[in-house]
Each structure stands twice: as structure tokens, then as C-alpha cells.
Image (cartoon, rainbow, N blue to C red; front, side, top):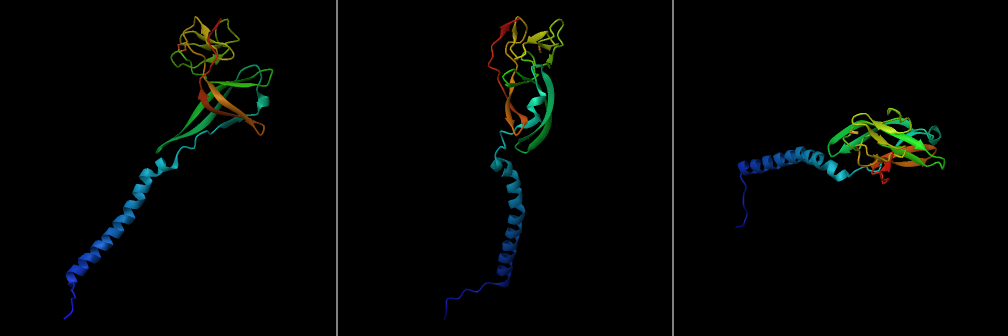
Length: 172
Ligand code: FES
């Protein structure tokens, strides 16, 4: 007499159905989990710079350029248009300034201030900045205009992230 355990047809069908159901559930859930955590696993592209033209296009007179940046934050992707005021000094050094006023965030322009053709001007509260973005003491802004990271490569000027402008304020 052996120690055989017989399994009923009903039990066998239950096991078979459970196995098939589990297999199908795993097939559906795995892609969902992967979709949910994928952005976290991919990391950031980071450090992308955008070409805005040839360095030869720029001079000591500020030139306004617009460029598009693609940003990805987790699951959220967007495209936005940024602006920079770009100058190239006599040494060939390039400076790309953000147009966002450091007082309350209005947009500055070059040479539009009344009687100040060689300054950046913010029309919201008469903020003024020098050609290097230094804030002019006695006007509302308390910091110099931020600047973009710059890089010249293969005959093109690339702009990157915005960083603080270390230049202090100056008397106007
Ligand atoms: S926001 Fe520019 S001066 Fe106030």
C-alpha cells in the first residue's frame, strides 16, 4: 500500500485557474509598475545647452535671443521659450544675461530707459542695470541680473542653466 495522495479533479481545476489568473495578473501589473517608476529610474538628462547662433553674430551691443528648452520633471514634460541678452566684449568674452528683473520679476530691455540708452531698464519700477547686468544702486533691484552658462563649441554659442551674477551693484 503506497502513500499516494490523490488530487481531485475539482482541486486540480482550482490550482490551474489560480495559476492562470496569477500569470495574467502579473502580465498586466508588471508594465504598470514599470510605467510608474520609470521616470525615477531614468535620472535627469541634465546639463543640456541650446545653440543660439554663431559667436560672430554678437558684439558689444546687447542682442536679444530667444531659444526653446525642453524640460522633464518626473512624468511632466514641457517646452518653454527663454530669452537672453547677449554681448561679446573686446576680449571675445560672451555674457548672456537673463531678462528677469531681480526686483519683482518684470522683464528688462536694453536701452529703453528714459535718458539711459546704454543700460538695461525695467519699466515696472524704474530698475536699472549696467551692460554687465550690475544693478545700479539707488534703483529698486538689489541684485545683478542672472546670467546663463555659456559655451562656444563647433562655431556655435550654446546657453545653459541660469546662475547668479556675482557682480555687485554699482553707482549709476
Ligand atoms: S520689477 Fe523691475 S524694478 Fe521692480
